[in-house]
Image 1 (tube, chains in turn red, cyan):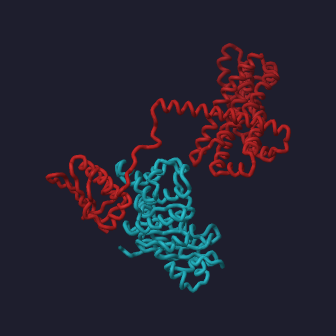
Image 2: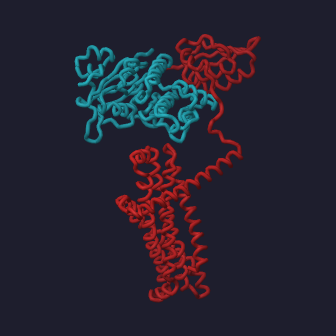
Length: 366
Length: 250
């Protein structure tokens, strides 16, 4: 079927211009005629529109006719009644300009960011309070805790993370030993690679890497899961059923996080140190020498230093995951935002808390 | 107005695995017609719609939209056929990260070369048609369910498709908004010559807008009645159909 294209003729008259449209006023034709037609409204004092030749007019055509009228185009003559009827609803209306979501000035943005930060911190403090109260209550009445959920989460966050934590730790120990051995060899002290790898893994890298993997795997999953529940109004349903979301959702996850992280950390320590020792064995050191070096290099306090931190990291990652989930606003994108925020906040606080532990351990000579 | 068939469905069978939902369905929708698919809950109305618009593969049969088979089309041909229709889904299915206005503008931006002002005016007009012109800068989550539904209809109309498929458009809307939607459908049919295929069981809407209906039945897995709703209510030979249209219990 042959379709007549949009034709726009601009007729200059003594006291203004006339825009004559004919053919099909469709999206294709209008996209070509739009700028020409609108510039005519700026050039002429008085404008009239003749649409008697218009055979068909879609949404784009209506938009053009309406915009021309709004810009002082005067009456439209000759428009088919069925098309005129479509323009009817817009006759009296005016399109509001501006965007409600328009960005404010820099000062406004700084102010908003500051107020968001303060609100976020106060929410974190209040959430910490809620968890503490809940922990005290659970300690008195442990039967109130949903133990099934604790073990399910423990399995998902712990057992299923063994492969990734093991691989990352083993390779880290291995890489450290590989990198450290040649320069230490130059001084004839490459046996101290064992001290380096063991101390670094036990005191710092073991717990930190475990916590970061936990934040990426489980903290984000908590945020997404609780966030989706929030979006689907499941949290509201819990509340109106008289079930406290903190007891129902947060407590089992935080407890599972606290219990699983130290275990994963011990596993990470073993694999990491094992990776380092593997390199030393490959470099020709006998196992007995390495074992003696290891037992003299590290003491029980080095092992405990890492494990104590792991308890704190576990609570932190699980708590932040749950908090970000509960803070989810509405819509699918909000779940994505919560998940990202849970990982970023967790990693930030893991490093901050680790620094606090470093200072405290130094101060008490632990 | 061209009275030829714009949609032809022949021998459509829809199945999920071994479970046959609809068997050997055939019907035609004429250009400029308001065609309603109705039936009791769970009879396969939405399933039929999703097969017609090519979301689910047909177990057998064929669907022609504007004389072309969507199922067999690829690339640019498929795009061309898809441009012939718009769909407003039951839940709205608006993109949550975009404002209502951006939702409507998206297809215009992607498929036309209209300048920004033109796109904004069109999007505003479409939203005004569904009574949402003041909510263009709201996110879907910030408006009510009924408003989301109306915005979805505005988005489906963005490119002025020849056929508009509406899945339960008035469910969840108040009677006034629902009646406004009915008159909008009739105006668009009158002014733009649009064809409507509507899945619904809202009887007042059906009487107000439908030129022709087909009624599906779960037991027969097919069409049990076809015609004008008033005729089916008063003269259908099937008592179940008469009861359905009269809203009487079985």
